[in-house]
Amino acid sequence: MYKNTLKKKGHWGLLLVLMSLILCFSCKDDDGATEYDPSKPVNYERFSPEKGGSTTQLVITGSNFGNDTTLVKVKIGNRMAKVVGVSPTKIYAVVRARSVDESGETPISVTIGENEPYTFEQKFNYELTQMVSTLAGSGAEGQEDSDAPTKATFKDVAYLLIDNDGTIYILEENNSLRKLEASGKVSTVFASTGYRKRAIDFSITGDTMLMARDDNMENPAVHYMLRDDAFGRPRTYMRGVTDQCNTVSVNPIDGYVFWNKFGDGTMYYCPPNNPNAYKKVNGIHSDNSFETYSCWSKDGRTFARIIRNKHIIYKRTYDPVKHEFIGDETLWAGKYEKAEFANGIGEEARFNQPCQGVFDEDGNLYVSDRDNNCIRKITPDGNVTIYAGNRSEGLVNGLPLKSSFRRPEGLTRSKDGVIYVADHDNHVIRKIVVE
Image (cartoon, rainbow, N blue to C red):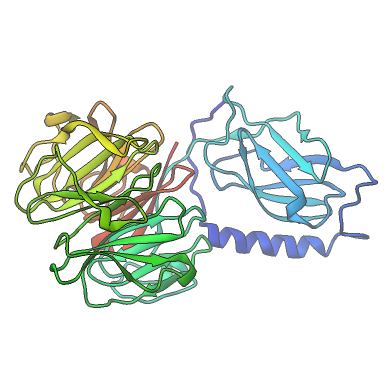
């Protein structure tokens, strides 16, 4: 069963280096052939440690494991672990988040080559994790790249986007596009090009990145960049429809692209490959100067509009098959132009400069509440609570509700449910793990 204990976790980049060193030294102790021999039995002895949580380094001991990681599969609970190394007598794997099966237990099974899976009689004792940590950034303001994530510097981190490989793309306010790879390396995709970059999102294939530009009508409202160019060359996607565009989001099911016009609060959308076939979104609330963030639920049926300068969040139902909205937009949480703090349901809740948001698989929305210095969670029925942060300004890691941020803005979420935060005034990227 779950053991509700807390454990601080290391960073992936450091973890992979350490595991590589362990593998290197252990291989020196292995005698004889190093390749897996299918004519001989595979022997499993034990695994260690016997307990741990997300990102725990697991070592499985035995014989005839070979040296090819592509032949080895390790399943911990209900999830495939990341195999980072193998020698004839040891397998090195990393436990993924929420690695428990339907019964709440965490069996360990190993498959090598075409053999049947072997399941250890002893279960792994999975420990729940609750932790806020600093993932990247030294805390100094700057734009220095580095292979060591905590030695890199950032300037006004404002918007985040993660891809399927775990690379986090970082928009610096009115400045450069940076990226943080799973290895920990921080680099610059392209430096400031003299215009205001406000939001980014991927096409449903992940091969194209769209970027909102907050500028005048003579310049593109939305750019696109290709993965084949390492997203380093902005091209025009949409020009002359809106000025001061500060959001762009892609429906994850039909791929339609949505963007806004700041001046009157309107929204537009188009098919992914035909921006000239754009239409105005009807049935939404609009007003002068709507500073907008937008995002989609995983099933593509709920569209959220976060109006930063009005301190409210709207939602609306969408049909991705018919490519049309159902009914009018409704207030999800917050009170119009009330820059305050309060937990509660719907209009009872208060925000102060809510920024980027992201959905989980259950339809909950997570939002950076900038001037309340915390991350909020909104359930589908509009119940608003604090997810992380104690509302005081600072840079304190540890338990989520005891941690502190300094004007967080950007937010993204990995496939494993880890939330990453662009901690704007601390000039760092934070990581939140809550199980």
